Image (cartoon, rainbow, N blue to C red; front, side, top):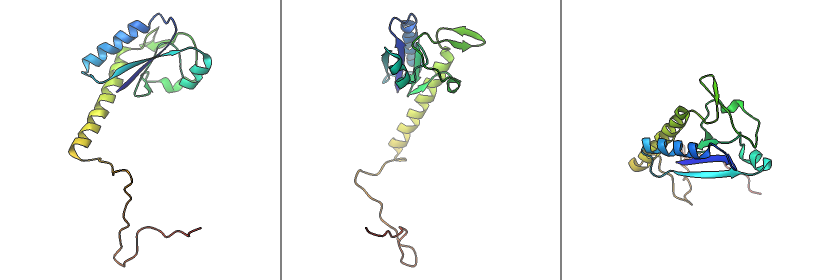
Length: 146
């Protein structure tokens, strides 16, 4: 699981948010996740990272705010979150829990498929073999050579 904490330099809430992330990861028994702190230092970086303000939390590259798709303005300042009709400077812990739970479920499902043999990938370099139809023709279409 990949957890990113994006922030501006001297963000007053970044330590509190990082502590919240660690608490939620412990609660869901996620041992292999590391928190990547990303300090955003310029507006150009903010645009490249699609940074909506400080702090921003992403789990597996997805912002934890449910309605984040409505926001399109990147900024180099504090981020405001609307939680239960109130504006606050940190996201709702429920959003973080939902994001971690979803990511953990996806990873558990992926791990289970790999251990049971379902969803195995073909080896590199392997190519599918054309199957012959009943009339002897191949299922692959012929291409003109150049």
